[in-house]
Length: 509
Image 1 (cartoon, one colour):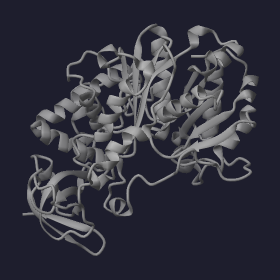
Image 2 (cartoon, helix red, strand yellow):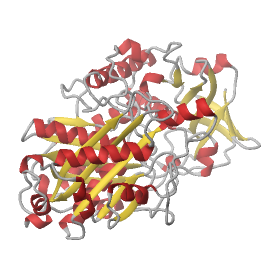
Image 3 (tube, helix red, strand yellow):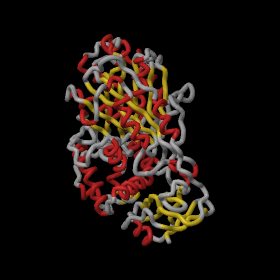
Image 4 (cartoon, rainbow, N blue to C red):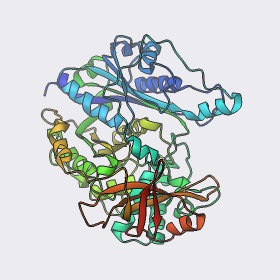
């Protein structure tokens, strides 16, 4: 393949600002620092950014200014670049590498910048100190253009019942996994601690981790005043941490353009496989202990790109599985066929609870960390996975210093997405009434570490009946009942569901 069309990552930059006050960096300030670190990493001048043809920013949870891509372009002198905003979804950074590598291979792009950040630690400090929101607005000629459509990841009905709360959804997925595996409550809780204790080993050694602290499995798994339950069985230490000041940036170009810029070959990182998939709606899915979209993503990252050749999971030395909550890691581990005692670390950063996650942009940090990892271990391969929403959107990429042999190509994701889209939806109702069975559930806790509400996904009828309609409902009951739901497996338990004034209500028989 001509070097003019061979995509390579050439520069990465990360910033973590652990010391902060009201005058600390804004979102754009953090991003600008990360961009210049990526420039420095590539060994080029800041003036080279004027040659960017595309600039894409990952949307912050709370956009700090009207048009952040335009504001960044103005700051770094890249005003000739086409500017885009990537909507909500943690899959975004890996999707960008996949999509724009294809654009370079097709001759549609030449030199691209991806960047994103959160400055929620600074923002909270400003609000607490002054009572005012941060004044981070910058001039804009209009609203930003989204690279892909900005759509809600859950329906109004799901949101009304609390399914927009990520801890609650992933905790329900965790409980479904526990039941499917046949684990006791106590056995599974210890396993969660053991899984994430290994993540803290990596975070403790990372210069970019928000919490560079190693913790024991018991410390992570046991609920205490300082490590309360958020959504059972998840303690605080099992939840993604987004109240941080972090940013990351990546520079993607072609081998030909990199050489014209004077970038040495030892900076080149090649994408040896990629995939992107989407899951069905939350209530329409097959089950909650696995993900068909993740399964197809795992297959396609090795199969859909001629560059990946005969690579398989056993050839991957370095891994960063998306780690917002334990179920995301464990499900990826199982889907890719790794055993529980596989000696490979499943993160190169320390993961979202310990490294911290800049909202939708965490995977920009994990890709940057993976680039550094495979550069230091030349000839090795690194796998990065990304997850957006509620197991809703998935992306993966394989990175190496090894050049791609032959042509680089990306199979159109629509060609394998069709299998997922054509699978039948699970029937569900928004107005359930009658006898019901719990399919999965969680108990949400308050800051006082006391249970305040149950959340149930269930079926009208029996779990094994494919025609039984699914529903979501809340459990408003006394603390003893809610506490009891955390002490034994309630999946398969019977109850009554009915439509209240605003919410579906479930009560145990």
